[in-house]
Structure formats: C-alpha cells, structure tokens
Length: 445
Ligand code: PA5
Image (cartoon, rainbow, N blue to C red):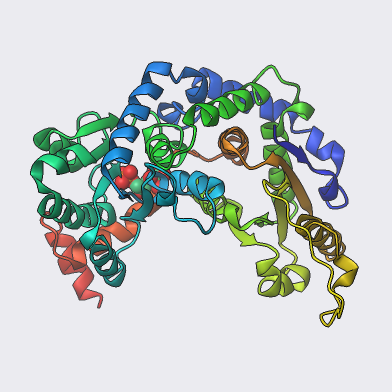
C-alpha cells in the first residue's frame, strides 16, 4: 500500500498549521459523502472501486478477450480523461522495450484521437495498412473533435481492410448511455458498447470501462487494479483519522503550501514508466482546481532525466514551487553494476551495487539539495509497480483532489474553461450553428 511522508515540507510550513486543517478536511469529506459539495452530480467516482461488480468485470474481460483474439493492434481513441488513465496504467506496467504483441494473444496498444496531427494520423494509417487492427472509441460526450476525427479515419480503414462484419466485432464504443454521435454510431452499427456513468467526469473515469477495457486488452489484471483501489478507498475513508489518511494529509499540506506562496506543484518520478501517471495527474489537478483565478499549477518532471534540463530551475529559480515525489521502493527486476578491470570510466566504486541503489541515492541527494534550495518536498512511497499499487495510487490522487478542491473553494468537477478554444475553433472552421461567432472572430483577425 502506498504511504505519504510530509516531513520535508515542515521547515517551510508548520505541523500545527497542517493539523489545523483537520476540521475543514472532515467537512470536505462529509460534503463529498453526503453529496452536498459543489459539483455534487459528479460524485460517481467516490465509491466506484467498491461498487464494481464481478459481472461487470467479466463483461469487460470477455470483450477484451475478443479483441485480443482478433487483433494484432488495438487503437484506443480518446483524449484527456478518455485516454490518460489507460495510458498511465498500461505504460506503468508494460515492459519498456518488448512489443506487447510478443506476448501470446496480446495486441499492441496504440493511442490516437488525442491530437490533430496530420502526420501522426497519416503515419498511423500507414502503419496499420498490413495489420489486423481493432478500435476502442472512447468519448463521454461523443462529440469531441480530436477523437471523432481519428475515429472517422480509423473506422473506414478498419471496414475497408477487415470487412464490415469483422469491423463490427473489433470496434467497441465507450460513451454516454443515450446521447452523442459515438452512441448513435455504436447503436446503428451494432458495436459492443460500454456506458460511462453520467456522474463520473472524464478525469475521474479510469476505473470505468474508459480505463478498464484498454488495460484488460493490454493483458493486465483489472481485478487486482480494482482491488488496490478498494483498499485505498478504505484507507482514505471518512472514519480514518486525519493523520493516518493519506488523501486528507496530502490535500491539507498542498493547500497550506499554496497559502504560503508555493503556487506550483511539481510531480516527480524516478522511473520512466511513470511518465504518463504524471500526465494523468496533471489533468486531474489542472482541470479540477485551475479556475476562478485560483489553483496550484500542476507541473511534472521525470528524474533523473529532467535533472539535466529542469534541475537548474528547480534548484535556483523563483521560490514558488514544491515537489511531490513518487518513489517506487522495489524495482521488478535486478541488475547489478559490473566490475571492470581497467575502470576507464571510474565507475568501479559502484561495482556490485544495484542500479536502483544509484537511483535511490540520486533521489535522496536531490531531495536534500532541493530542500536546501528552498523547495518543500513530499514523498509518496509505492512498494512496487503492479496492478494493486497503481490502482491504489490513482484512487488516492482522486480522493485527495476532491478534498483539495473543496479546501480551495472551487467546484473540482467541472471544466468550463476548456470550452473557450472549442468555440473559437468551430467558428474558424465554419461549423454549422457558429455563423455569428464566425463573423465576430473573423472581424478580429
Ligand atoms: O476530464 C474531462 O472531462 C475531459 O478531459 C474529457 O475527458 C475530455 O475532454 C474528453 O471528453 P470526451 O470524453 O467527452 O470526449
């Protein structure tokens, strides 16, 4: 089970000030439980782990099996909350080099629909030309342009290459129960479909079919993932004392740091497999808290890689930052530094040590240097990377986000700001219904 350590923030903020959040955090937790908080129509994620049924998991696993048996490649089309959770889990658990398809019956997972890159889509369609591929089309609204555009291209290619009947078998929709173009298409074409519950927002949807189906297709154990989240749901429950509740403590500490001028939180990992956990976290906190002129800016780095790029700024730049480090205690594999008779590289002092020991000393050395440089540090320890720990980590961040948004006084479950670019883009592209906006925007150019 993951654990949180805030000791290295306490030279910057006081333990007493953090403890003083206890009542407010309780109020936030009660408001989430009782559905009396802002955005209370989007609280379906709160007890999602413990309410997932075996029947639902079986349905997901059976659909995943159909895709695994009939596809060399599966394209997961989605953006934002409809893509980042699946990618975070799959990349955290996958071998970094071995193509997944080398595992029996496991297709390669490729993500699309999260950009509008013509070259990306061209190269993807070229790559797929000789492949037996399927598609998981994920969109809660069913109308997101990036995803819809990719799906239009991929659906046609899948039908052309594999025939209409096989395409029906290997295209799965994950969308709203009733509304949106993705629902209309799925119903008309007869695709297998899963519903994204109305009361679960995109960035909180990793434990719905949005995350679970792609993760199952990639060959990972969704029962264990959910079990890890259930355990964390208990560990972050209303009845758990404030100091023992990691979500409560994390929410309180980051809000106290924010009050003390630490406006930017940098999520740090020391394991390249966690890059997309960082990306998922950025969306979760950025979209949930950045509104009404407020909110901690969520940034992220991969160490030690980024110590050679962002390290300078973090050590000596403006002192408005703090770090939250995700530290994986035990790697999955063992690799020792070999001894070398000539020692031309001068590395014999490391001979016999595990690579992870070097990494851990980089982590410890960095923590001490950054704290000395005025950067408060929190540390989240993850025992090892597996389905249970990742499930727990994701739920921990979700629960803390709900509490933290409440402490900040915003509605953490809406995202009104993301509509602004869409309105302008539709006006510039002359989308029907945007005639007035088109005139107005063109007058500004
Ligand atoms: O968290 C959110 O609500 C967003 O990031 C959405 O997930 C994202 O915009 C994709 O939306 P949709 O699933 O409707 O295509």
